[in-house]
Image (cartoon, rainbow, N blue to C red; front, side, top):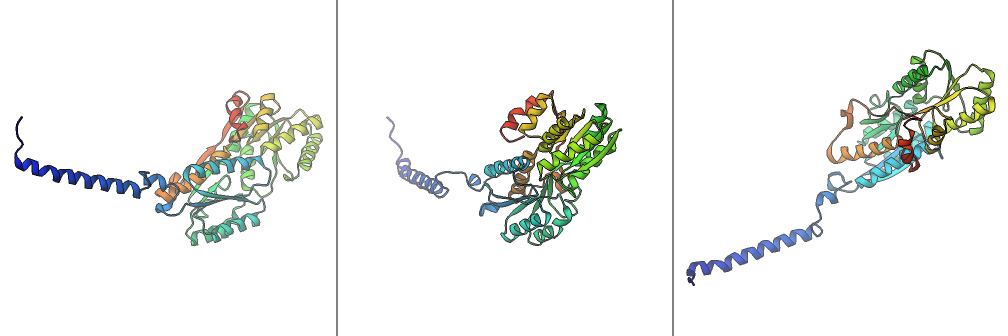
Length: 337
């Protein structure tokens, strides 16, 4: 066996010692980062690696309206994914909703998602949010108002475009006299839908205003109008629950009218499968809530702005008919469609 040169023997302890030092440093680094956990994972939901982001979602939804349950579900799922602290509040009264936004500003949240059903009522709170340097995104209603009010992004459906699509579809189905039921006066989204229907529908269209918070009164109003004018052959509603009330009204009045609607829920899916409702226009409320929270998280953590702050991110319209309703039925049962 060849005997090692003395200098080589003397260098071995030095190499071993150096290796030991490196190993020690690596173990110290792993210990300092929580046992090797990726620090980028720890910072999910944290702006600049600080405290968890707080987001407030404030809508004009009424209590018990399943539509807003789906918006909230989407927001909650995005918050869980991103590690965001989410609060949800709603008030169908415009002044009450404005005050809820002011509450969020006072709580110094990191971002606000808001509906703009009555944009003028939100002008003051939006100015306060800008002054507090709190980014705000719009969802669901107010597609013509989000940019003038200084919002960062908008997620929703172009209601005028959706209405025009419905008008075209009704004309193709041979309808001649339609009633568009508006369940909330002054709601810009509902007015835009019915105006859109009128623009492309080549028959006669009239708006019927009802008290949407009173189901019995709504049913009675639709029933009375159908009895008054037997030429009405189509009832278009602005919510799944109102479509189901319209189905009752058609039966009670003995009318030959068909029923179509904007928006859907699990009960409406069943009604479409049975043929009592012709079609629905899905604006995907779950997606609106999800994208709003996720959009704020992306902005706070990475500076991203969906649509570039210039264009809205559209979530509809998507037609659901008897031919494709089976594809969305299982999602409707889970509360996400």
